[in-house]
Image (cartoon, rainbow, N blue to C red; front, side, top):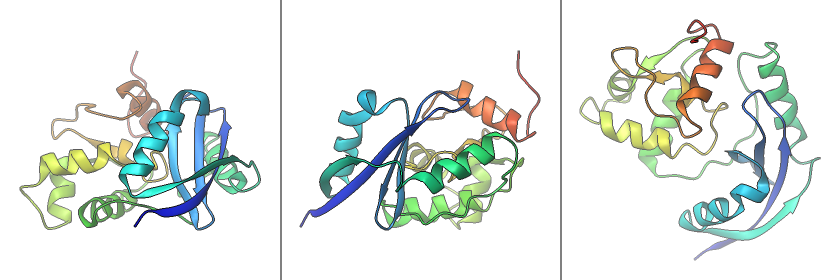
Length: 176
């Protein structure tokens, strides 16, 4: 059965461009790179795939705490997020996303290290797939996962955004 949910949405400007933030009454559930106008179709498809349908309602008040904490993060005043989250995914994806939350600000891990940490040492590619499906980039810091050789590989928002976030955190030096 598909759940009927009200999705509260708003946008914010960031060093990465416009971010669209989506929350339910249980917590933040998605962050998208780009404006709501540009991501509505993708957002609705992703929610439907997760067995959810409902109405998108613009509401800056519901997502204000998320916007405040993201602003603090981008301004260098926050190193961890303390937000209620409403995450939807498979058990494996949630296990990976929980492991990502353990990577400290300014630190990185390889896909292989994450696979070992969750007890699935041969699941390196699956770790990449779970990262790719992470609905809360920045808050669930998939940008902190890099290739075993230190390469900036894969990021839903683009490798340039991954590099900017890692530079912001001091994990890497600015790449020219």
